Length: 287
Image (cartoon, rainbow, N blue to C red; front, side):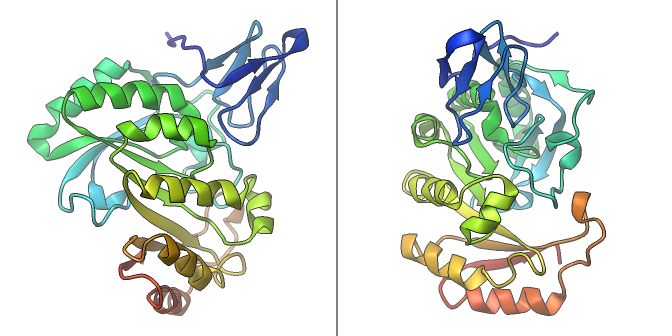
């Protein structure tokens, strides 16, 4: 049975509509409808966190898999995911839980149970919980409640996110978060618009989070999409902090880009050289 949890950051409108104020989409949701993310539902004029407690994926992963290379390297972390996403990237690596999730099986778990799982896994090298696989911030309330429960156990919270969230909810959550890997997909507003978001919001999230938490950044390099953006992204990151670790991930055919070729290795090596002009720690992934 699903767990009912009223959504935070909502505004009641006329005719039973409700406005979600969690991310910059500001979805106007009719009675019985969902936001663009699929995880926030209008039920009788009240916005609810539809994915609250629904765990579709759970695993004990190496921390480096997030990827976080400079945050407790060599340790492990319990990773959990739910369903839905507020972007529509045609190359999504986890599209089965982020976009095509209707009817997917999910285990219902409370924050207390999540904390217990994390605590029991300490013997296996676990340091806490990573909210990942789908976009965790659309399940804001569950992440917030779990993060508080995890902190009470003396363990850590990690977010793997697209960074597409409004500043007020972000500021409320960050005191409970220890590390983030934030995905920056491109450096042009046009490309972000195609993927369903805004570049300025993601940049703002990186800037804010890097002042409070350990932050690492990832870009999936896709031929003919963003392969020429890497040096400019790295230069911008260096203006925040040249110590920010930057992960360059190799694209493989997936979802709506299943007919495309993988990123050539020479493109990956060139991107690393370009990023290293500005940043001290640049890593290649999916190689």
